[in-house]
Amino acid sequence: MAEFMELLETIQAEEASRSRLFRGEGRGVRTIAGRDTPQYKGQLAEAARLIASVYEGRRPLRILMEAMTTSDFPLLFGDILDRQLLGKYEETPQHWSAVAKRATVRDFRTVSRFAVDGAETVLDTVEEQAEYPAAVLSETRYQYAVQKRGRRVPFSWEAMVNDDLDALKDVPERFARACRRSEDRFVTELYADANGPHASLYTSGNANIVTSNPALSTAALQTAFGVLGAQVDEGGDPIMVEMVSLVVPPALEVTARNILNAIHIDALTGGGGVSAQAIRAENWMRNRVQLVVNPYLPLVSSTADGDTAWYLFASPSVGRPALEMGFLRGFEQPQVFMKSPNASRVGGGSADPMDGDFDTDSIQYKVRHVFGGARISPIMTVASEGDGS
Image (tube, rainbow, N blue to C red; front, top):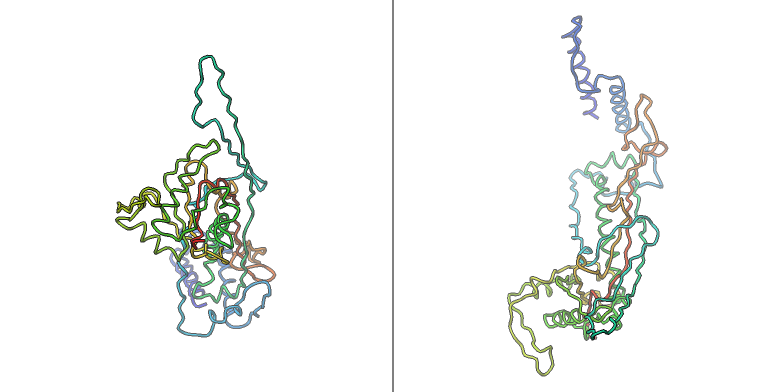
């Protein structure tokens, strides 16, 4: 309140000084744009009177049922002299782009992704004057639709005025973190379910389950690479896989880093069995495996294997991806809105959005994010429950 009054006195003093200096001389004075207008002075005086009425208790407080008020934050707005606002939780890096392909769709209708296979296998030998053998192409369709997601956070005007720690003014930042977490959780649920690796993605028919579901180790990774390398396309030809992502829950982060950061690894030759021999080799995995620690795995796989299951994904940027994440075209990024004021000042001009709604003085933020996705090619990923079963 004192700042408003001092500003008014300063403007009045400047006006008086100009009047004394240039009275009768017919000369104008260049001032800050808009400061000398009656509308500006009227709005400034109105703001000062409004703040004064709140500070002096002449303006009644309205308890809003549909908006969060100062009473919803008894600690934040408590009568305590020494207060500090704690830092936020550190943001977890986004993980889903390492395992899913990013795509855009035109609208909310179901979209189709078509895979065409065939005619890529090794050519047949053709005898003299013999007919060339015909090849058959096959098609596969994958479908999904994007959905709108969001939330709204309302505050009372009184709560914003009392927010001297700026604890409520970071709602847009909170919305941004919520969008990133929503994307990560959605993609996690594409390849994991309550019992570990998703039952419809990792099956014996897809041949993408690591043999015996071993716990994460150097030998288990060797087995996983063997399973992934044995995958073939529709024509029975091998699939070339270069870079892969190793996805683990937080409980396996130390184990995974120890494996990938080791200078040498002890590996087996001969594919295991009686003829297998142990050798020490340079750790080639460091240059071929990208580690992704997904904190949502134990939350999604809450019934079983949330802390033991691990996954290998071929790079989604090369060839056919295991998963696809789609965003609405033109709205690929989340959008944050603030409700426009439905009121205007008596002195003229539109109201500030921070003045709140005309009827209730409530201030509202909203976030909207549109995305969807689907499982595409199961042969581009393998998984282990990690429990040895």
